[in-house]
Amino acid sequence: MGGMLFALTACQTSKDISSSKTITMEIAPELTTCHTWYSPNPVSCMQVREVPGDSGYESLSPSGIQGFEYEPGYLWTLKVKKEKLKNPPADAGDTRYILKKVISRKRMNP
Image 1 (cartoon, rainbow, N blue to C red):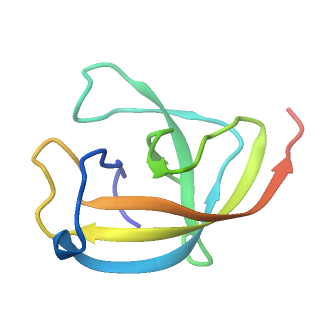
Image 2: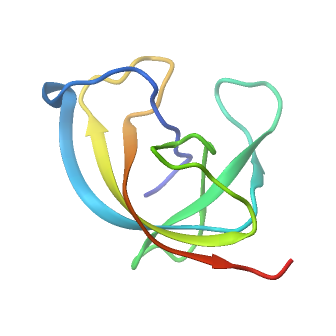
């Protein structure tokens, strides 16, 4: 996945997508603090990684997966559609994530 990840809220059509694939993503049970291009102050972000494959977590806005509502305290495994956009808006990232299925939600001890 590489780099900080952010979601789009603008409408896109299939002609705006350069590539699309379904991936399995793991979401850590705690939020982390991250720095973004849209805020001068640190914000709370989900810790995400593509599995199998990624060894470390990366940051994604809690609203960064369309159709998914983050709930802290759970280790989530999701099936998501990952879309790379051809011409993303200047004020947004170039990747969009869309929830396809919650595979698991495991309660973690605090």
